[in-house]
Length: 362
Image (cartoon, rainbow, N blue to C red):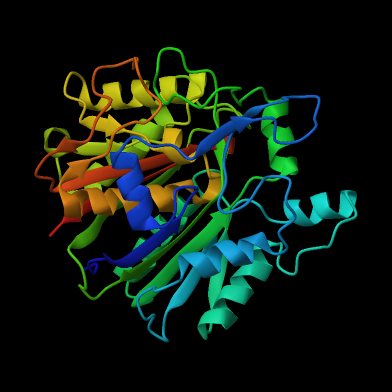
């Protein structure tokens, strides 16, 4: 018999601040995305970026280190038998960029470096790293849940960060995936994504220390395209169906969805198709947070799961900042007070990866 899995504690760092600060700002429909000409370039001269305590052109040595230390500030005491799963997609991009511009190289750059640093910093013993594009942290939380459920570990810290670099900026600009405006998730006039700095830490445990249980998790791959999402939404739909089956909940019982909602034409259309195919005329109230904090890539899912857990605790569904005229009628535009028992958080990424997590209040 599988053990239950609980989120014991969580924190995040975004352009809006920590978990409580980000929560309050989104409730007030605020955004940390600043539109301006951030640096000289020929691909996309100006766009909106969400940055944490820095200017984009400012040199901040070991910025990943800085984000994680801020995220772990005042964090719950972590048991010494805790296993660590580092998630993210930055890998050595920062090292490559600083080598090109001949600036000081970061002490911690690759995912393995950052994993080892977190283990040493917290006085823990072992861990692993996961890179699964923009679904990285949702995949990490799914794997952690499975390992705890199987009795392989009692506590797992899923942790990670990603942040805006010129390397990342140029990549998305070359794909023509960014907007010159602030991103507008699920809006009829959406034109692209906005990038953002982000970090998260979630402590998952077999012991019940909170009211939030992870009751379903799933990872799928539609193998559609190296960068483009499936036009049918079948991969994401399959992932959501699997978490419903694992949790034992029916489609009509789901109360809210925290969507990936990047603000790109194809991603948001794919998600809408996936939701409609599962829930038909009764899609739960759906929201996305990237209009407030930008897309933090591999850290996005962890940030969204932490905020989804807070939705359950506060009995509140967040507004979709940036969306004014949504493509469908189930997108929340203002905070909604509702007695919540469950919520699904889902993410998709390059390479056809999809991951979903279902949280319940117990």
